[in-house]
Image (cartoon, rainbow, N blue to C red; front, side, top):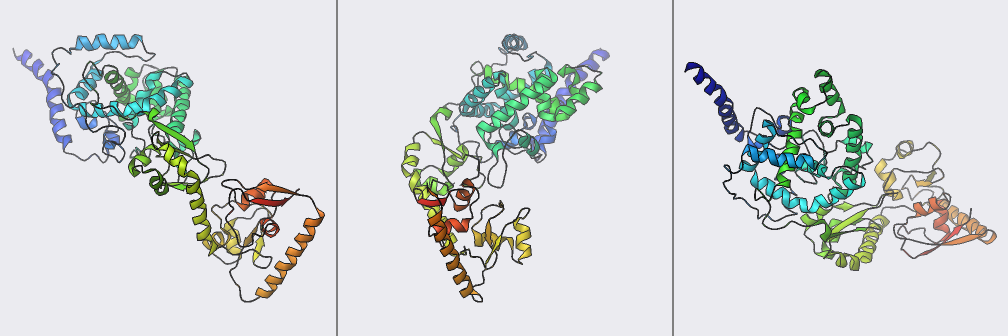
Length: 498
């Protein structure tokens, strides 16, 4: 009898401890949640997803209705372990992943069903928008379509999710890994937040990890903790490559990462059986359209021309960090809008560009100084803006403002204004300018020229590069552009052939 009592206490003690832990952690702060994820000794709801802390973020409810199923049938008797085992067996036969029943996986599934139903319902609603894109590129890379559930575990399908360690986006790329997979990042743009580009990068990375380990469980673990930690765990396990055997040697978060993935896969696959899903369908990706832009635009201008809600505009275009779509050399900027609003944007597009260019020109005219031989410096090989500014005892801001520069890029032979002095030597500058113009006029009469039509996004600097780095001062002089910085699309310029 005594032995039986001891045995009974041993069986009940983990459950009592777990319940006590759940009560304690339910009141605690989730500031350092990422380091405590999926602990096997706790079944507190707050520790079941590495991205629960993202659920109340800015973009979480934009792509689906707030109305979701919160009630559920009392199926605890019908949904036995035997039923779950049979369901997992059927899944295992139809996927390259190892979907095997074990106590850890069952615990995850049951706690999600009991305490996280609203959470799962919301994610199912959001998946309507994201999963078609994931499936398209997973298929392109010849990867299992079930990998789409990885983004659920990584980010809760929040395109602007940011982990405490600095991983960002739907697929949670760190800065270095993102750069390794050609995701562009600067002060205005972060392609880790871009739906399509980050998905392509994730596919390429997962493909590499699977070829590295030859096993999807290990590839998933490596995606979360890095290949080095997986190799160390394998070594500590005596060369064993079974995830469930080496998980005790993995970082705490990763030891529960794969069970979370399989629990998510199960719940989405058997959502109907458990009566999961939003009462209203979420926004479909196919209800949006994407257009390539021809210049820089602000979100404010786009909102005014289309009437779109600003938060929805941001949710469809999370790659732009400061409500501004910049114009970058050798990069094409895109804009995603609901299909119903795209005609409004197209109707106003040309006006938006004209206003943007006009505002930039008006702003710059009062600050940009006309170039002459006496107030400018000829850029030489090896020069940069910092050394030029220091050499002429002016600030970098002054140098860029006087010359209308929006980047630090320079080319040899380019002239830069390096002083704003207009009093002393002004007449000399004027006379020198006239003499230079006369030489150019004479030059025009003795050489061959070509006509160039200005395109959207063109600047004097860009045109100079297109025609063999012709001096900008020459372009200005030959086309009467001495005090003009804005080039209107359609303008005709006379350019010397080289």
